[in-house]
Image (cartoon, rainbow, N blue to C red; front, side, top):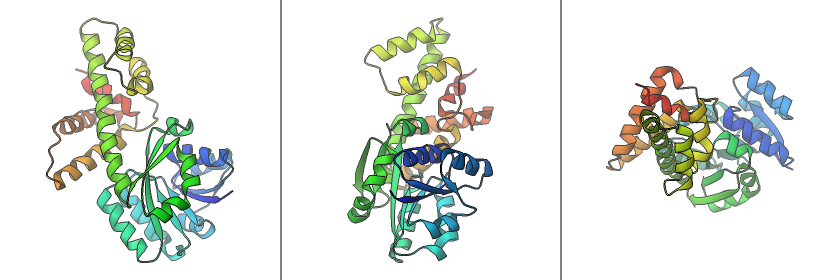
Length: 284
């Protein structure tokens, strides 16, 4: 099996590492956080002391990082080690413009760079139920089909590099609003002296059903906001999609309201909590 470099071993990166290891790949990783590096070793991977060392040892590099700015910094730090044999697979939910710019820079050095954004929390990735949205040249995407199969149950090639990031913003817009609407509905149920658990059961049984109710409903009922995907990261995504819409002269009034709710929850101390903690934005 392949030797895969993994840069970033946070919530998503850890889940990706587990999937790759389970498929028999050798995972060689780096993260700035020493505890995360130790966790990778405990899971069966190899942790090195820098991203550059990982690039020296692996032809395929997977990035799982907070934003496009950090991706660019990491690529700059390993540029001396990059060769035409390298394939860079970026799972970061990033700025499509930054992704396209980086792809052009790397293409000038004959280095393949694809964005393989992931629909699903770290838990869904761990369960093999995530969806991957891939942007890149046909040959590069074809080369890593086996790798992408480890990330989730289905991969969609949606266009050239940058298209994966653009599609992820569309998906996150809809998915995030589903969470916000569920939180508002449960808040109203409680305000009307209805049992929120019964309300959730009825919502699941009828036309209002959304898969978000399965993944986040119980967390909202119990207040268990242990993070599968952090609220602050989704706020970052909403700001990205609003910026993309502004560049395209497109109005997104629901997403503007969503941004305000997320900022309210973050200001209340829930930025590092699970994104289901948007429920707390409705606290009076």
